[in-house]
Image (cartoon, rainbow, N blue to C red; front, side, top):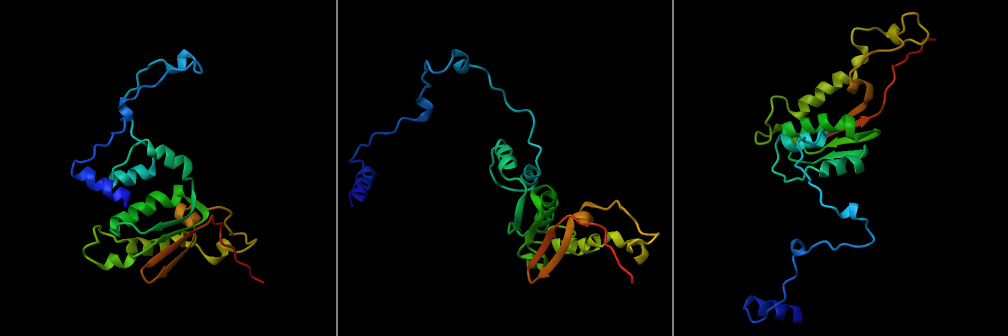
Length: 202
């Protein structure tokens, strides 16, 4: 009750409160605990380079978010790869594709899960803003998942067969995407380092 009364008195100018001293008005006090070299004034210049981080690229792409540049150093230091990424963002199709492209490789741990929600919006005109929707991109990744088999035959993977390949140069997704699961409005990608498939014939 007292706080409410004080607010009313301040509102009508009947109570004068002491304004706190602004931090900008304060000066740093010198102390004998610090050597003079540590308190000596030096000039700090404006940064001439922009951060080189995937998250910064996403931020600059198309957002209205205010962000301090030096925050990205902190993000990179403390947000190492993570176990789960859940995209529940703008639902714009180009945002979903850009986010996946920027985050799946550098930000998600081996064994991690990348989930995109509300992909039903890929069928709504107001959220489709790219030639290929994220659903289209996801369908294309099914082919990428099967890249090891392109232009090859079963004997290329048969255990101890003379035609068996020992190593293949594959795209990053083919080498690190274990599975893709489709649900109503959700697509889930499981990340795991893959090895060449192997077949047995007895």
